[in-house]
Length: 261
Ligand code: MN
Image (cartoon, rainbow, N blue to C red; front, side, top):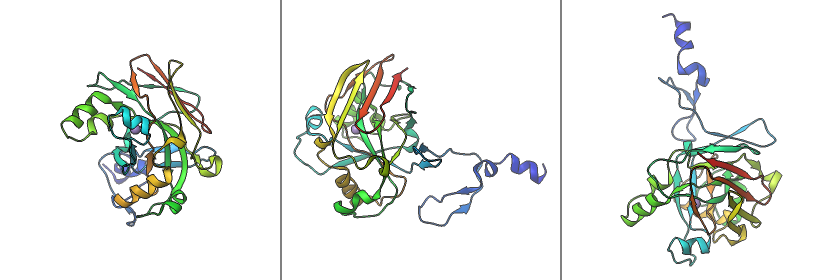
């Protein structure tokens, strides 16, 4: 095989040869790989750039009434977080109804409608009054959950992974820059299944605001550009089955819809 042929068939060519190091902040270097792993990107509305997704953080039980329905005391305990893998992202273009596969192993598959904040800057120990400066933009998303598996693992004091962090468990819309939407501290958030309202609340009912979430999260993890945060769901989560259509809304953003297939 001549040199030219080799390069045509290597991952080096198709990736443009520049890959980030595992540790952000280190110099980029050329890496030869035996195959390519696609990056995960979200379109940025009004831009030809795409937002590279680094980590997906999710906050649990951030609305008092949802905390109660999950069996917790809704006093203002410190927020807690879990993660989904980046490739759990299922991008849902505005104006479409994306097919969303009913995942394996569950008999109780739940929706959770959530505001999503996307970070354009990082840091550690960010004070609440500086936290929103990290936000690049916002969108809306579904924290899809295999509730039966999540509960079973919780009962056994095992990690939630299998209930929360599976393939395509994070349907999400295109990203809007803060300059386009402002910050989200109030406004309606609702979710319908087959046209029937299931969840309906106001973002001002969050126990921990986006700014407080970022601040708390940054005490536990160094945050980086590309991190996104699912900010928790209101009460009245519930199941869907194959054939159902979910539509979710947050004031100031276009609706997001998926069909369970
Ligand atoms: Mn959630």
